Image (cartoon, rainbow, N blue to C red; front, side, top):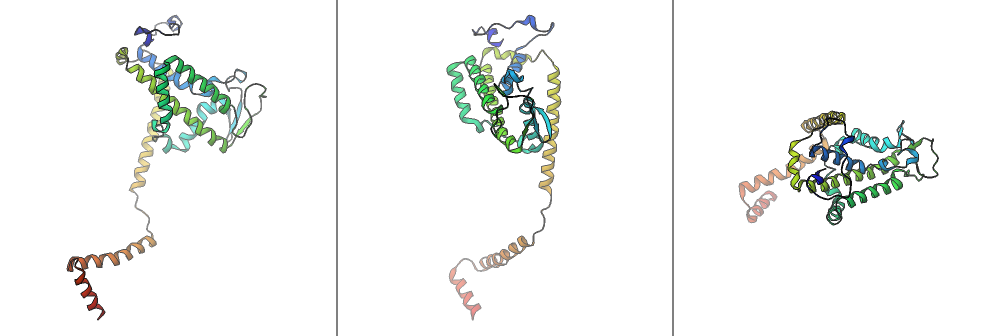
Length: 279
């Protein structure tokens, strides 16, 4: 929509607004929101899963005693586990682009060279390959979906498999983030980006759920910081070994310091004092 409004030629057909609910008006901001959502979805491997198992919805897995679909495991199972068990990491700075700097630079150059649509198609193909080689393959070896794979059996995911998949899942999140940044920077460099200040014209249930989720995350962040401040404010426990060590250091350092203060740094003076003590 934004490209079309600016008069740029695209390889894709115009949006058919007759399919949209009557009375709904899309602004440029709405188009950007949808684009960000789609770019994120593009990197969820089960969004391009096998039709034979309904994109992972027909494949059942069991993780820590809870049964869910393979789709749900990749869509929210991993993220919820990290958020609950590694809150400090989840709320920290792990999403900084430095964690994936090489890929970011390569994607920027490819975007300039190939343009938007070829980049989108390349990212899609990467996710398809990721789904086939990672998301549908248990780290222990067996395939979970695809041709000639029997359905109906519940697959157990142990902590080893979870940790192996978690690292790859985190990388997908980082890839999605850096690519969203590339796309947004290109949009914001365009003349028509000035229309973005008009804001959104659509409010959906998803917006309300997102706001609620972000409010919960903020509560967790505030509680975590309060806990960290409380821990920093606690008095350290007494250690006799540490006390004895510091006392021994003080017994040597303090007399020497007083000696230098009273008699200066002249070595001859110190030698005479030592002789007098020995006599």
